[in-house]
Image 1 (cartoon, rainbow, N blue to C red):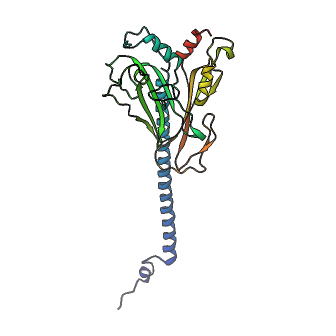
Image 2 (cartoon, helix red, strand yellow):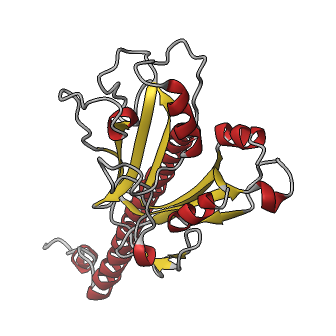
Image 3 (tube, rainbow, N blue to C red):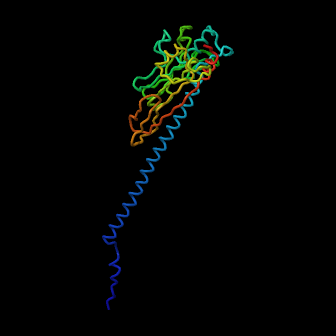
Length: 293
């Protein structure tokens, strides 16, 4: 007698075409969702990294420039650290009356001075004060902890904010150049796409008192006429347009307005952010309060 054949085993030994199509569709949907999550996570991570970098850079450069610019116009004749190889009384008068240096004030270097960028181009800031180092940390040939007339220049070159330090006594022709000292610029920050500066000026005649409060904010190319009219700089307001790290696509690109300049749009892909602050020059405010003109 032949054994009975169990036909149900053969009938259900595999998947039907419909089942395969359903499984394939579900697999594709799950894979697509996983890929989408991975792409979204990558984009978010890049964006977060860019935001963090631009915020960190902005805080760093604002803090550093504030600290250095705050010293503008300082001159302490009573300081025991002050080098006295020159007429310090005459030097004090020059520093306090020229906190912001302008072009053509130095015969040996007529191009050294604060300048207004043309048609929204980057501005140049040049300040002077009594200190022991320049913006690069250089003693410019003086012994450590010895104070002298420092001139700092801040400018942008190839999207890099740079600074260069000078011995003001050399620039003014009061002492010879130390050949062992150079004035090479150093980079303070990369990815700087705009640097703009305005100057808060006071005038006793306009104020009607000796409060030394700014009456308005002027451009660098207006300062010479203002100073000739007995005005003086007592504050510096500056703004920067910085780019964050990495290639992040922002659509639409941000449109920003820095100080008194025309609105600008980022010139390339990336996360951009503007930073702005005002530094009150306490040394100059005290000087102007004491100057009874």
